[in-house]
Length: 233
Image (cartoon, rainbow, N blue to C red; front, side, top):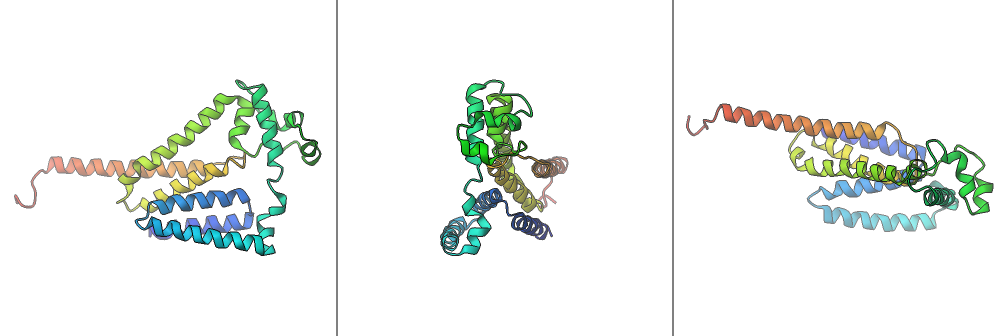
């Protein structure tokens, strides 16, 4: 049942990904796939398969116009280079405290050295499209350090408790939520928007690990209360 539920969640994610057509999501799904393959006993064969599929996909992208339109290759970085340039210039001039909350979108034009960026990005509600640079630009380098530390802590927690959860019925949900969250971290280096979905994945990872830990402690307690083995009986 849990495997089917995990598969349904993955299928839903892929459908949303294809409908939304966000290129940053491609990176998220690719990273999550690589990590989840790393837990498989035949991971070398799976990585080889990913390598071969990547080569075929690359050839299809450069040869077939439909895939070029799907990936919007003509858009390049979608002007992210200008947004990143502005964020980096803000960080250089305001490294400790940044410009302040909600200041990047209205101030970014003054920190772009390229006139193309100023002419193309006419909307003031465009963020840095990189959550790390975005936080550093508005709140200072310290905020970026805290953000990286937060990502690292959750990732470390997931890998540390994975062996403990491995024999649990909830293992596949734990694995799916964990690798999806890590994939979303990579996505945030190309987007600035955050939502509650990553927090739900983190909550599920924490809850499952705590449930498994409690069950193991309960089993140990039962053994302590009833030390007689079946042989003694």
